[in-house]
Length: 100
View 1 (cartoon, rainbow, N blue to C red):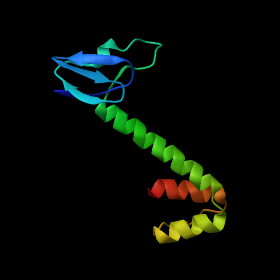
View 2: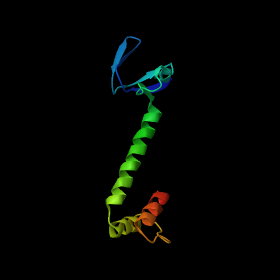
View 3: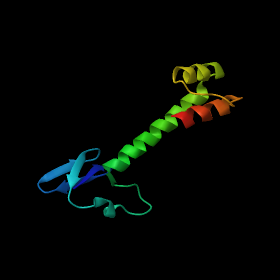
View 4: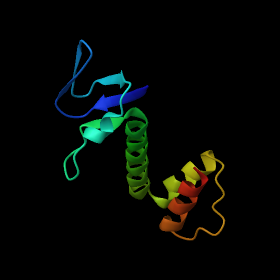
């Protein structure tokens, strides 16, 4: 059994109709219906979760870039992150990401 999120259009499975954004289960791997060069219509739920996690990390990274060095050091201290060898903002951000 596969769990999918429908990203475009509608899909019928048995006697049910699913709309964009809905999550449903199927015995078939529907990703084979995705066409190269086009936006994916079906995403395995685990892939959707991975994409959401990657987006969250990207957003967090942007937040780190907006923080001052003092704020970053405070964040690291709260998380008990060792900043040894971090001499500038980029080094501090790298240490934080490495620890998380």
